[in-house]
Image 1 (cartoon, helix red, strand yellow):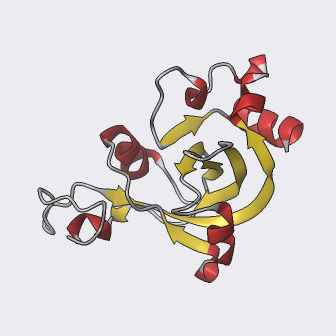
Image 2: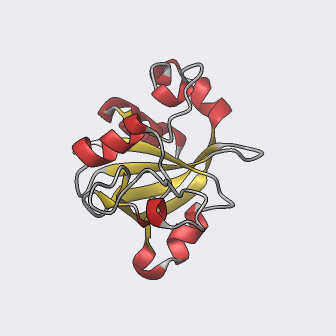
Length: 152
């Protein structure tokens, strides 16, 4: 089993949106970074744990827990000219972008980015690295356990 931190802007898809979605499941659309895409396509597996992170908001941080609930499949937004995630270079027969579905597990009190930075045990988390802008980053099992036991 692997663990991930997946960022979403709460005005686009929040932990509450996930909790109230049909079957408590949402497709993780709109990823347009090759490294993040490769994590979904090549590494993510059914049942992997997800720290659902609110980003680009007044107080960014972990807002809840989710789980990967599908294998990767083509992101339909890449083909929709009305979508902000439209990619005119992506073709139906050779899609560039994939997504996975995530299912809601639990809403938690917000674990703010500042709180994550306070703990030396989390110093190597990719989300804390200077310049990190990836929307999906791996989380070690040690980081996962520390966050669940000490911060939630």
